[in-house]
Image 1 (spheres, helix red, strand yellow):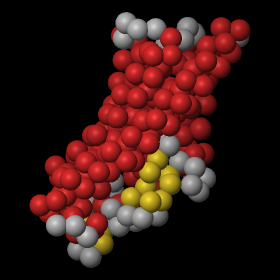
Image 2 (image 1 turned 90 degrees about the vertical axis):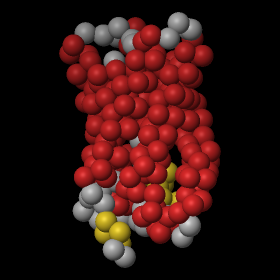
Image 3 (image 1 turned 45 degrees about the horizontal axis):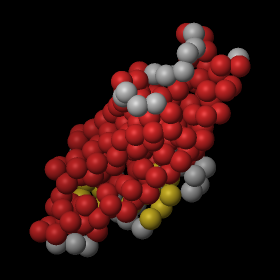
Amino acid sequence: MLGMNKTRKMAYLTLFIALEIVMSIVPFLGYIPLGVINATTLHIPVILAGMIISKKEGAIVGLVFGITSLLKNTFEPNATSFLFSPFYSLNGTSGNIMSIFIAIVPRVLCGYMAGLIYEKIKVKGNLRIMIASGLGAFINTALVMGMAYLFFKDAYALATGNEVNVIFKVILGVVATNGVAEIIVAMIFSLIVMKVAAKVIVRD
């Protein structure tokens, strides 16, 4: 975490929340449609908030991410929106209370754990940033897809046109493609932004 007082923490938290909301609204910026699912870049401000401010603020921005996911999948649904919204139904497949957990919990933990890892890890410099941001992104993807398999594997198989007995491999494929891409993007942006933030915050 970069040194700052309470007023500055609140200012940066407000900035990250505003960024999260704007990214969620602008088409193809926060949510990128990929057929039956959306790829996302909204984990990046969450991770950055955790590292720049603290794990607590990272969790708060993660909560905002989760709420935008719930709203996005309620009002602009795709075939797998039942994973993130209990208010969405398609061909008899509906979300439930666990959809709220999938939408929110991984995103809160993404910000919290990125901040915690950045705070506690012993390595310094670029490697510290890459490990914290990479693991934060991985936590988000792994928890979302893991909970999707745990609570909705039959529905997910139906929505994606796969047999239930291969859905675990399908989910691993999503983690290995979208998940890895999101990890790489998070590490690159985090490296750039953390370098700039360190200079700006110290200068201020």
